[in-house]
Image (tube, rainbow over all chains, first blue to last red):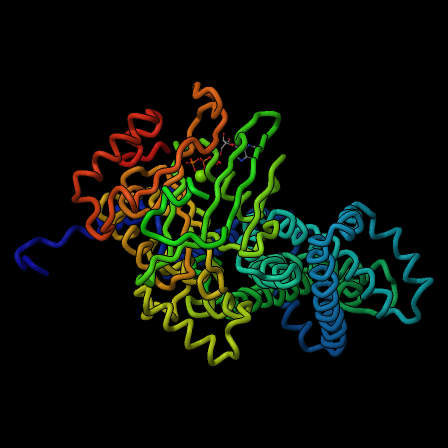
Length: 276
Length: 290
Ligand SMILES: Nc1ncnc2c1ncn2[C@@H]1O[C@H](COP(=O)(O)OP(=O)(O)OP(=O)(O)O)[C@@H](O)[C@H]1O
Ligand SMILES: [Mg+2]
């Protein structure tokens, strides 16, 4: 602006410096660049898929066609509704159970029990189907209990570590303000860890979507997208399975974004860092 | 006691408010503190509405923070005891205030929220209107009333420190320990913090501020009295690796008028005196060892 005579830098050299920035470690990045690069990279991936896929693996056009066909069937919407109901109920229940368990890690008496619970993530989910089958009537309860168990063991592990690693100084600080043990517990263990709870919930959400189809398949009854993927012959073969995967992916990503927004809304003290 | 009278010719000593009795502490088999003993009295100076400002001065790594934690009831001594209040009860955490290094705050609450949170534990404040009024008044007297709506992460280091002190005051603590309030500051900033600490101690007659520091210059400038913590065997006077209180200096009797005390020749004499006696302390007022 200051010197009008100055020759504008060549388009080439300005592009070159911009590109160079994209390869400099820890350099900042604008939202526009992020999305532009992201789109290009996605196109690149799709191209790779198209060029290198084995003939038996569905192609993009096939999957998109299958998707369009799928959304016109009643079975799809019924399956989707069933799966999403299961996912949401599980998300809520797993969050409640895991948070309760993790917070109670602060209480010495509960510590061994909570630790034991987190070790249950080494259980094979498949073999455990027997337990809810005996305990519960109805396939929904069986699937829900399996999914909640499968997710909670991970969520509780992550959140327990957060509670375990709270520095002793934080507790002492509130003690010097004359707070009672339970006031300290509430403020430091529960309130101060809310950002971590949201972070863990995002993982929790992702694990839910990973396990959801598996649970639907191993529980055998009750339908859902998982069963439809398993029985894909009825719905158009592997292309339909891929289309359903795409649907779950999109829903999962949207929920992930929602939880991220929820975290910022619940924790206004957090710096609104860029990142996705 | 006659010896105490000699130390306080111009003031009236009342009952003790904090007593350390033969406090010793080891970590992992290494002794840090040996037989630390001193008494803080409730001092009333006729005609003056001032609290007390005391310092525990010692070289870096001597065990000042360890002692402070024991005096506050956050840590148990291996032997000895700490008694607080006019009733001289064993100290428990929360009986006395403390602002730890780096001024911890509740990061998820705004400045005013931090104050109100601390105020809710103070039985002297009747209702929430009372608490809020007191909170705003304190923020104002610490010069941060315009920061009331900010989260601690958005405050400067000095503002954080003042908020942390204000928080201890509104929690109802009359005796407040400050751990290294001058650490990492330049000379001018130190002076500002020192003045702020003097003002804080002058808020009410009941207030007693105890600064724990390795900064000779500021300690001598602002304190009524200094306890020197030295790495010395208290019985023989030989150098040792164990810290204890090796001297008590009543500055009020030696250099009065603390507002511009640092301009008096006696101020520099005193610094020389302390530095001579404790070579480990010399120069630490100007440079941070870490
Ligand atoms: N929890 C602990 N476990 C083991 N050793 C400790 C512990 N806390 C302190 N120490 C040791 O006790 C000694 C005194 O430490 P302290 O923090 O009290 O010193 P300080 O005088 O406050 O030092 P500075 O001026 O640097 O703050 C050090 O040698 C330190 O390593
Ligand atoms: Mg220290």
